[in-house]
Amino acid sequence: MPFLTGPPTLAPGLAPIPVAQWLTPDTEAATWLPEKTELMRTHRAQVFADTGVPDAIDEAAAAVLAVTGSGDMVWESPLELAASRVSDDLCLLLPDDDGQWVLRAASLVTPTFWSLEEKAGQALAGIHSAVPDANPDLVSRIGRMFDALRPGMVLERFNWTVQAGPTRFTPLAAPLKALAAATPDTAALDVLHLRVERQTIMKLPETGAVIFTIRICVDPLKAALPDTDHVAEFAAAWDGIDPALAAYKGWPSYERLVKAALRQLA
Image (cartoon, rainbow, N blue to C red; front, top):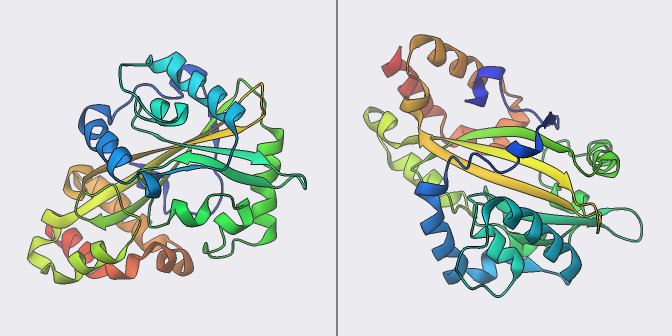
């Protein structure tokens, strides 16, 4: 429930965690892995990218499988095999000749309203181009963080938003916004869900690639607001976000339903 620490921001907000907590416990595996692996096979062009970095893919896959075991599924890429064993999406970034970190490979089944097909092969500046105030300073800060990251360290952060319905495979925001628009105030608590991203970064020792993991948790909003204290914290975080960031996240499309839900929970 990251709203307890305030509204989402653009600050990286990464904190170190023990390496043993990198992928475990996998809180979403039981409910998400069957659907995830099905999407990996039926939507491969949308959810898998490889720009030609076999050594980094092999090293990343080995790091994941050392935690999870290899299982018995067969996949075209070692990165897909690794991704089939965890609920997290796996993205690999490496520096180009100019030192810019580039998204070189990924198995990404839970995009929060963006397209892997469009972002694969782009540097951080291109990946973050739609983010408000994603100026050169912010991109440089992230790049310097990647540069300074030492093998053996794992950094973690959380991000969150609200959506209509429980869908995790969301390359487009429009269907969820349409569902929100069609939902009456009286059904707000039946439709609204809290979508939380757990993100980690870790640098691989042999290739120097950064593996960026994204785990999506989607739960009914009413389950995340079990008492008046949580309702108050959520309301403060919702109202306290920077307006430009709220617009980027699509929050105006949910304002009516969120306010209705908060009234019902008050």
